[in-house]
Image (cartoon, rainbow over all chains, first blue to last red):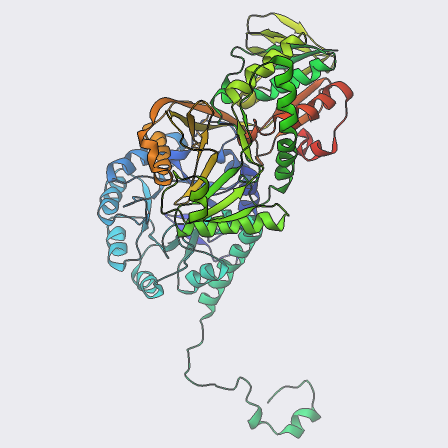
Length: 268
Length: 370
């Protein structure tokens, strides 16, 4: 499976798990979790970090060999988000940005109008835009048409751990998307991450499920395996669902005596 | 024994007092004694409320230090005749909404698993203890042994006590540690003056990583973590004990002082050496404080300041002999808990400076773990 790589805007990643840093109790716990997750790309809120400061979360990512994906968390308008993205590009020297434009603090849901506006402006300005969006197939399509390098629909609200509330919409987004689909937000435990991959997502982005777990590094390991398992299951092709049972071994068709007379030869 | 202490914050001061009491000749070097994070801190003594997964060792240190506080303060007040602002009336921790209550219940389960006695409160019971709490609070916990101390009274009292025992203060910045023959032999000040010493204690808080003169890898891995803290003033009875709240997932606390001051804090921001007060920081504090205790908007505004906490990679202090530089002892990384941890830190550091030993309670916090 080593050739099954995630490709976003021409860049390849061996891991399909993208991490966030929010909620980590300490930098050491964060470092352990990132290492355990096997992630190669991790998003950092640019409004909550000074890129020039020593010993910050950016140093932790550097030490872990993880690429930084700056995000615009905390922005409520397209204007703020564009400004924050530009500051991030200047400070970190990367045109990549995870675009977040939040509608309100209660739900932290994306504001679709501001989001699309910001995406269009950032794409025009040469950014590689990865928008955090609602699980709305139409909005996802519009973001792709606007030139985003991926679309990142939510499973449920940020930090809620409610899992994927509308798997059908995620499938619809995956079916029509021509860019990678990253399930972003709402993951609560490993089965949620596996489900996202089984639904056909190209990657999963999560933070709280790991950083606020009782044992973050252990949960990060679980998420790594879950994303790999879900991806493999998707590629393997699941069996169709049936209403009634179907015996898995065709025992009735084989004469019992013959099978026991030639042990190990298998049903012929 | 001559000791130079770099940094006259709460940790440097407490250690200066304890070592001077054992006969050491102590010099404190700080451009602004009793300033820095010490002057901004609210002074909560709340090891139980601060508990986080994976930080059980830190909890034990906090409990140990809290247990030493009453005697520490009594001794200090007796020696100086000053009030150290100790307030041991317990702490109420409340949850604002159902999600916050679920999170607080998880914390209680964790506390109980560690054998810590906490009392669960219904919203009604929490409001019987503190009637100014919002009617809608869902419930909470009462930590009877937690409390608070006023660092703006405690720090000057520690300084006075140390000076009474012969300690002196040099109001300058320490530029570098003088290392002679591989040993720490003193401190060079920013005006070039040299102070010789048998031992050097580096207790410069968030600035501990900036002192020059040391071989690479000696300095502790601390970074500044900004906290904005607001001070209000009540004219009559308002709160009788410290209130901590979880409001839509954010933490806020209100610490009442005997003179009517109410300390509201604190943000936690990773912005390097930036100590500016921001509109957003203030707004978040007031928003959460008002949701929890609606009456705060009627209080008089007194002050707002930002302090820089010394954060280590595991949030725990870095205390003990520095690796590779005999004579140098580190005392930093106390993060959100400097005031709480002052009594136990002073004892651990006094043993390191004067006896070259590590008390059991200090073993998990040695610099060698990084």
